Image (cartoon, rainbow, N blue to C red; front, top):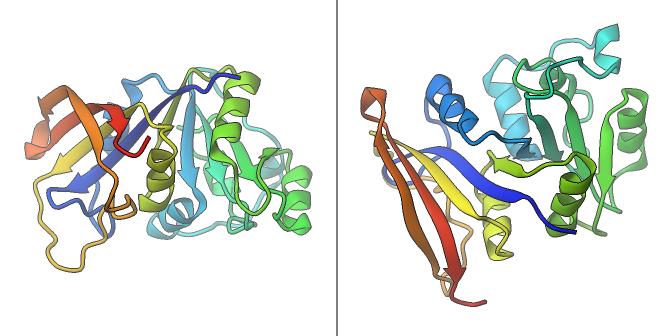
Length: 225
């Protein structure tokens, strides 16, 4: 099976921080929409942080147990959650107007009670890998099952680092914010190995409102491949 095109998309400060910053969601999602994504890929920890930032988890309602009916032009959100971190809170994403519905990527080690939670609420889920989700296989299944040509990754350093380490990323899209966060910052590319060099080719450099700059790079190759 062929994998879809993978685009990393993040809003970061000039020194690479992606945590505890006031992201302009209009700019972030507005630029993301230009890629025509079929799948929006997020890690469970990033998803949990997003829920905490934007008001927490409301009680479930009857409608949360059924798939939302939205236009097919709206992307599906695929969330990597082999540990069941988001049990009890996935309906937050099902209600989100920019999410057609949720698909959960799990592994052979995922708790059975989490799988039952997904089944009871009619969430699709894909099982790959033993202890952790096999990213390459999961992406191939997403491509085949949902006819996904483009996957946009909107997550933190852990998932991004894993995708880059496996040479699965095609393009990197960065919204550079005119901010510096200084010492102790948690940078987006902190998980790249020190002996690994990834060469990039600039595809776009565009000044946006509020002195933001949008950079898009093509990933050329990794030196250790």
